[in-house]
Length: 239
Image 1: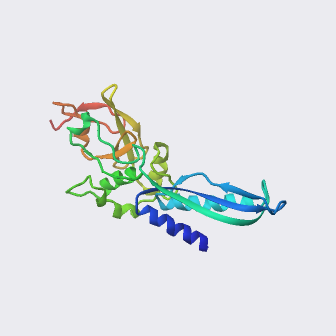
Image 2: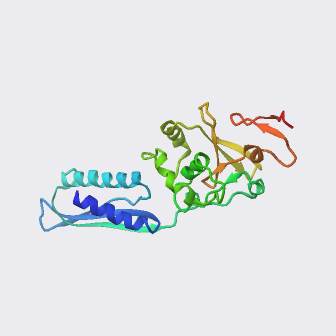
């Protein structure tokens, strides 16, 4: 328990500086040859959420129990243990990414300027907890992260995990993207739920909130309504 507490404290210090990855090394003496030192290292893992940290620590416990229990080589005594942490800049996609030019002029999307892997969560919160000013600032939404249930879902959000997120949070979410090749909007993920949907835009693996569906879907001079389910269009009866 004391070692786990020290691990968590050290990780917390690095998290204050930004995104974190970490791995461990342990060395011990063999039972069959007490003078021989052998080592075991764990793979590097991201440690940016409580779920990822819990998963990392549990992984360490399981691997070291196997090592000490003699699954491969029986270890008599651990001589040293080290936790190796470093901060990193995430690859494009898990942090802020510019919108395609075709979407910028429409002013239909809230593109939150995050520097971590939680863009999906911030986009959802931008819908659930809207603000009237500086909606692109991530500081407007971090305080509401505890309103969402996502502990067992790895971030950045995979499209294949959205169904589980919806079920946990009783939400309906659709995801769209823009093809620069065909110059058209395409459906990435369509929910099976029947509640009012939260419509997200996914581009370069970065999620943003579609705040104005009509502006998002219509081209210059159009007055059409596009169905969020099938994306078929029909003339808006109010125009």
